[in-house]
Image (cartoon, rainbow, N blue to C red; front, side, top):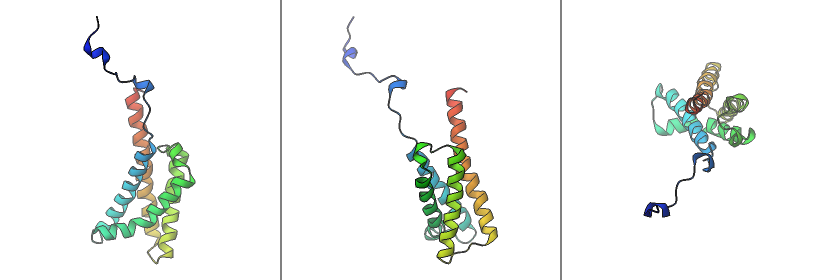
Length: 138
């Protein structure tokens, strides 16, 4: 029996729907991670938006360089090797830019930066991978 609802287009099955690319989400998360790192660091020195951006910009530039150099849109949530390469590039380029602009690069700051950005950049990738695995049921 034909009903009026039969004339409406139906949603395509999940398998045939085009997937939204993951890289824009990963890029936004990475920028948020770098801004969080800068905000946490600036919290001890007076948290103001301009100060956060002043701290963040060298690492945001390093992040952008890493995204291009390591072709992250192809595997944006891969912890290895892309995530590790992105982490190293972000920190190295950020420290070089800080040194070139007269900002601090004390060894303790470098170590804290390595630890915090490593935890945040790799942690988000591992969390996304874990969530994807849980959603797939495996």
